[in-house]
Length: 116
Length: 115
Image 1 (tube, rainbow over the protein chains, first blue to last red):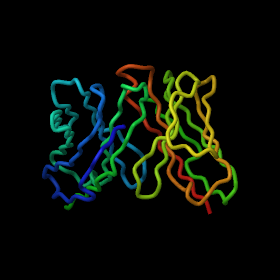
Image 2: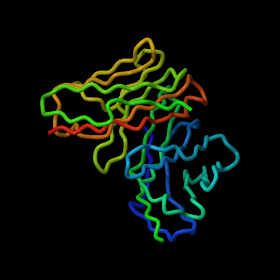
Image 3: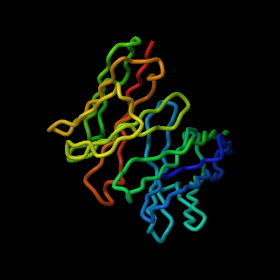
Image 4: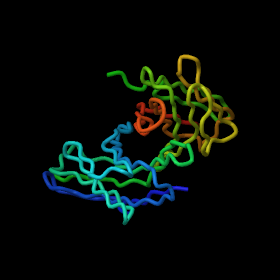
């Protein structure tokens, strides 16, 4: 079984500052993928960034970067230069292909609030 | 670019009624996933289909059934609705197997309210 733990139920960040959202995972499969999704109050699930277990470099997508520490089973999301529109729920998720199942397992999420 | 389409976007039903949610994947995508997200909860995997065959099953109640049709759209049928079924239902689609399968694209969701 795989598991995602997000220990920060809520976070505040000043506009234009950087913020790190924590995510740790647990899986016994050597092949897996890690995702971050953003869910604004409107409800849609927006894909932000992906990191494969065999990727040598940390993933980056614009203002988003993933701090992947495989030995610590950690996949923290870093948002640089926060904007008011970044206020949302953020979910970390894992997909494990070892058992032939490609379902996403999500963490409980972190609610990020950006302060002007 | 075309995205995943879900209909209806909002649905209000009474207890014990039946509901059908529809999902139209991105063109050429052959895999569909259904997730349920209760109020204040994380999304939970329900069921998935690959090439019109059920490929995996999660925490889907026996009152629910789903299928994928020849045009790859999928329907989630929910019977004997309960108050606890009130949730946001997401459909996601992906293409094939391997690395590309990791890229699941989510639809906007159907918000079901059971009264």
